[in-house]
Image 1 (cartoon, one colour):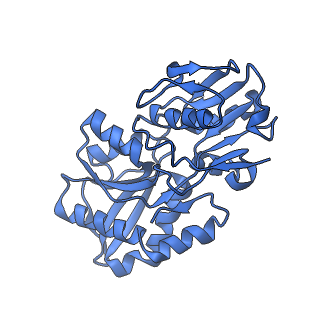
Image 2: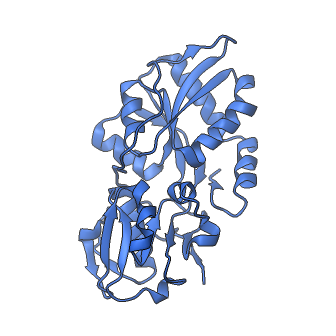
Amino acid sequence: MKKIQSLAAIGAVAALTLSACGNSDDSSDDSASGSSEGLTQITVGASPVPHAQILEFVQENLAEDAGIEIEITEYQDYVLPNTALQSGEIQANFFQHIPYYDEAVAENDFTFDRGEGVHIEPYGVYSNTIDDLADLPDNAKVGITNDPSNQARALELLQVNDLLTLDDVDNPTIYDVADNPKNIEFVEAEAPAVPKLLPDVDIAIINGNFALQNDLVPSEDAIYLEEGEGNPYSNILAWNSESDSEVVEAAQTLDELLHSQEVSDFIEETWPDGEVIPAF
């Protein structure tokens, strides 16, 4: 039986370095440039689902009237989009939630700025063998991401369900488990690879975008799913605050479009069962 529980009580987990291996599909110059139609071009690094889909909607329906043209560079991982933004390969990125962004900026001295939350992808627990977390067996194997930000998020989810107790630290990892009554064994992997662990573990705790990319429907397939209300993990658009003013203005214009009623409607119509939820 599927259970849905809000993580509002958990609070924001600030930690980071969402890791994974992947390559971008292309790159861009280090500043926005005018297109042949006189529009200001901005290259945005994005995860394929749902971020690039949302950007495609904006490009096809809203961007021209706002005076910008969006080029999308897709990334399969959570590391390269920030390093590419810092180096000027792209002008903005749209892939990360606020706790990840905050920790990335603090740890790497990125010269970034950001908008407010655009959408939330509820984190979920998936299993090929059980239908309820209450049935998790002793000595269970649990697939979990190895990046600190989402590992903390996953562990808090298990704690909410009384499966373990964590030490009172800001950014708990698997080494901060104080009480493990079921003797859970954690199987770590980079975030994109966690869905591939499902055949070999009792449960896997999977990022919403990677669930969607692996043909999992969170509202149907997750045995436990976060609610959007009160969820601190909203995804944001980021840009380099030290870029040319034209670049910054184009990014700010794009951020405004991402918070439009049209985008909210698109998200709700494209993911009507709450797989992706507007955050504004």
